[in-house]
Amino acid sequence: MKQINEFSGKKVLVLGLAKSGLAAARLLKKLGAEITVNDGKPLEENEAARSLLAEGINVICGSHPLTLLDEGFEVMVKNPGIPYSNPIVSKAVAKGLPVITEVELAGLISEAPFIAITGTNGKTTTTTLIEEMMKKDGKGTVLAGNIGKVASEVVQHASVKDHVVIELSSFQLMGIQKFRPHIAIITNIYDAHLDYHGSREEYAKAKIKITENQTAEDYLIVNADQEALLSMTETSRARIIPFSVSRRVERGAYVEQGMVYFDGEAVLSAADIALPGSHNLENILAAVAAVKLSGVSNEAISHVLKSFSGVKHRTQFVREWKGRKFYNDSKATNTLATKSALTAFQSPVILLAGGLDRGNGFDDLLPYLHAVKAVVAFGETAEKWRETAEKAGIPLFEKADYMNDAVQKAAALSKEGDVILLSPACASWDQYKTFEERGDIFIECVNTL
Image (tube, rainbow, N blue to C red):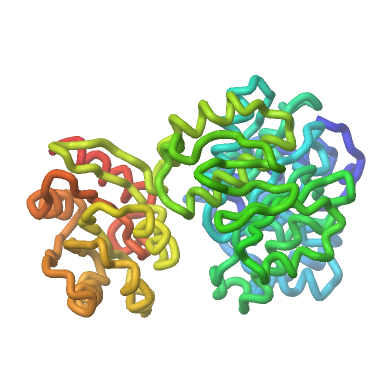
């Protein structure tokens, strides 16, 4: 960890706790800052706040009083989930107070270079593949960011010989000022989080921030099948490394005649890849480009891609039972993610779907349901799924109460050779705390068959 003086003696307001706020507060204390932590959850319900109080850090809980900003703070470190429309954040911006996220802190103290991944879909799979390939080749790696490990915490233990492989959301990227990855990846950009960003343009601008501090010594790996994305990254000072599933690209990663190539060199046969789906091929090409630029061998790449069956809850192969293959895609909390999952399979599919009703329908999935022979729907959107199944001409539909009921009904509808796919196209919060909980329960129910 680099010893920096940037925060020594400065008054810093940490807004919002959770894991990132907790790590940021503790790091800032090490860096000599004068810290106040402000969190909306009352103290009696706030174990993290109580632990910081015990460590001698000033904590204000229960609300976000605007008068806090009259206390002479020089920097605000904001939890990524708190929107800029929040009154205390918007007032800080109006006062000219720098508002950063803890990823910025990680970038300032890390001795190790960053391989940073963002995009609408595929971030976690790409991040995990890169880490697995680097590890297989014996290179030191540290996993961080939106994948569940707080960057400003884990980079404290990374050396100059390591690589920090970090997944970054648009929320995190909005709060960077100097953060500079040596290798950056933008997997793709589609409409997402518009309630937070206000428009697709603002969302895309947040994603493109991943490259704003890169130089000609750095690399930006970008999806060449998205022309709009390519044009948005033209102003980057980094060396552009394209990837494409549809055509040969110069200096990049692509598929041609059944082989995966990087910069004209054959890496492995696409037939050897264990992970299904064209969307996953995009993720694989982005990962191959990143690790080839990092000196990873073809042998290590091939070994990982022949055995990697998916990130948990993201088109994850669970098991085979009586000739039926079960896949857990609980992370599919919108129709775009479910489209990607559906295009991965040619076998007859029994789709388990449903969840929180956000007011949208599922008509945009109609062109992708041709392989679906049955739908088992649950949650608030079950009746909407009934309507969608009827429009698609799907002959079999069942409504289920909870996951155990859904799995039992799907198994009863299935035949040998079928795929049973949980890809809900909805958030989980009507019945489950998180998509992870929903997916874990699905796995448990499959294993009890």
